[in-house]
Image 1 (spheres, one colour):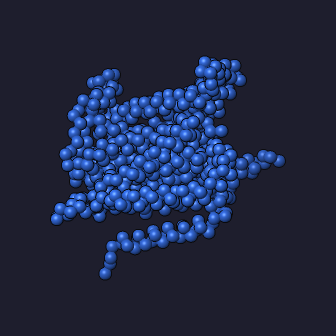
Image 2 (cartoon, chains in turn brown, orange; image 1 turned 120 degrees about the vertical axis):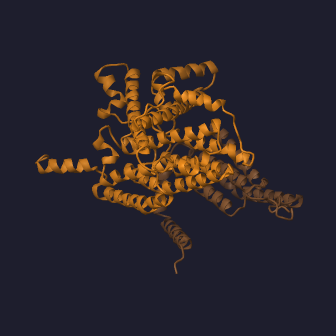
Image 3 (cartoon, helix red, strand yellow; image 1 turned 45 degrees about the vertical axis):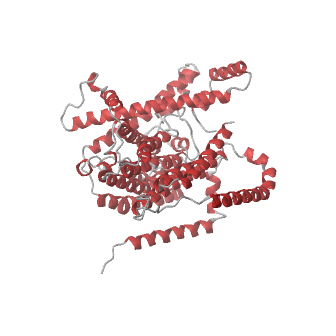
Length: 177
Length: 399
């Protein structure tokens, strides 16, 4: 019962905050709502027993990405006057009735297709899903998988990160004549 | 099995009897409700005790700083002025709650809540004793790092939303400082995780024992350095002097909380003092043996088997000893943090970043690799074991 309550809370937070993200005009507020969304997703991970993934979600997004976004918005002045000098809104509202109808219909169709495609998996793994929501640790499994089966992807992503780090250092370095 | 406050209580007959009584009374299985109730009460008590410790922290700060500067400190309210923090709290509640008209009101009200939330959420995994742990998550330390980074978001938002130059500078300094110093802190925690072989606080603390030579700080030279790297980084993460640049009084009035009054300001102050307790508690748990008591007195076997006390009393005496061990270590570190604050001058911003990125981070990386090599070559034996064993071997023991 507690897992269902947790799931309902997380799902409500995820959807509600996401609607708030696209609904607000203020970029900084949108960023804060996004923080709520990311916490909701972490709650969803925790509901299905992926504790490591939930903690990673909080560490990476709440600690790193959201602060970086806040910095970027603040430094580029995205949160300042919403109207330009002609009185026209710089940040228009997100779409009109037409776009809402088209987006809603396409979301429904895609959701139906995905549900139809994954229906077999849901019915087949019903017992498995219930059994795996115990208190077993996912850290050990993720660690051994990362360093055995997926070592290539792991190393490639680390090289990518190294490249990003070096690139940032080169861009940020003061120019010398 | 995760050791929590419920699993500790459920080993006693009285608790099981109570659960079965409640089940027969309700007509259905009541263990779920009682578990919820116990967790609720535990969380309630811990949050309130920690708020009390945060309040007493302000008193300790003023009294210790007075000692260091040969002053009296607060001495009017209560014996030795110990009720000063209550008087401060009453004053904070009575003050007018001012929200600057040019501020972003939504974020101005959200910021102190985020700062306090980030600290309060960490108490879920702090190992006060082997029985008094709200949740022994498998990813305990990782979770703690994650939720405590919310404090950085709170500090930054406070600086941004106040719409004041001082606050803005303080908030930006705070956010950059907290993000930067998370790197060496996390790397030093990682080297301990490597030694213990797990991220839950239960695993980390149980890999150590009661005596100093069995603690991780004296396990090998790398962890000894790692403790100091962690401690310096933790000082910077909690915005304490010599790293109190976000609230540098002489430059920025009072930094990110310049525009805050009343309870909103008190939330920031409380969050800071509780976070100091948290980082000291984590340092005690990771490096200084946590709640472990010498001679394994903590599990209560000595009291029940040798002194023939009832099991309930024996175990609880053990728990009290463990609590005493944990709080003693943590509060000694707390004292050192305050002592450092009133001894060292403040760093400049460039010195702060140089210290983090050019000194602490490489040292922490070196420690991590060193710990990995130590695990590989010496199979995780501590320095004491190696020296003692080799000395005993040279003296002819074992032949």
